Length: 307
Image: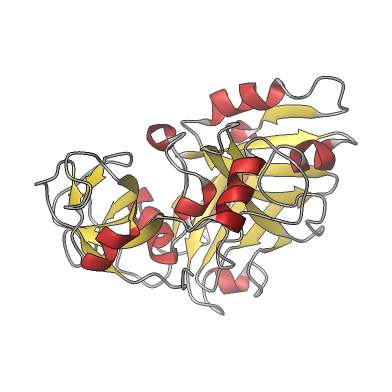
């Protein structure tokens, strides 16, 4: 098992994430017409979560988006970046937009620390706000987490000033604790946005006041007409399991009723995860991983309420 950092303050180089830059005078409207969230009203110092869906409303990417001047930076899992960049490029047509993989130009650093300590000295205090930092941007995610996107040439210097280094698993655990999903290759097309709590205010990845985008009809219908039967929960498990692993409940029998979203080693032993599963099974505490008789999850609390 990978060791887990137990320090209250640490930083991690986010080597499993990458960046797409969207520039040009139509950048905002281009993204607004494709993604689940309102892009045109992101303030100059703002950041938002957003997703890209198939026409059937299934997420194929999740982004953290912020502005740098007239440009928009999209942070996403590196394993899906090439395919998503190609997909976005197909929609450019006559739009005055340029798309570029700029992962090599920036070092992405995740910082975990209470306000007033590590990232409290770097990023704005208000969640989902940004500030210029060392030729790049500091993005406040929540009370304990921020992301730095700094020029690659200065990445090592910035890291040397941040204190205790962590590992990717430490950041993944922080994502899980915060209840923030991230789409990777193994979970593409597995979930509609509501299944991963994307419309919950604490996540804020969907706007229901904007116009059409791919999959919007399905997402809106789910919101206005039907109860979401599968939701994302936080849980612990004894054995390791990868994102995308199917989960089962007694009610679903041999048919899977969800999948793991993210997993990471836990400081007290075992693992923690975010899991999308049929709500009735989660409420009964009878969710099994990998097969109907596989390891049983122990349900934990999220830092927000899901209605």
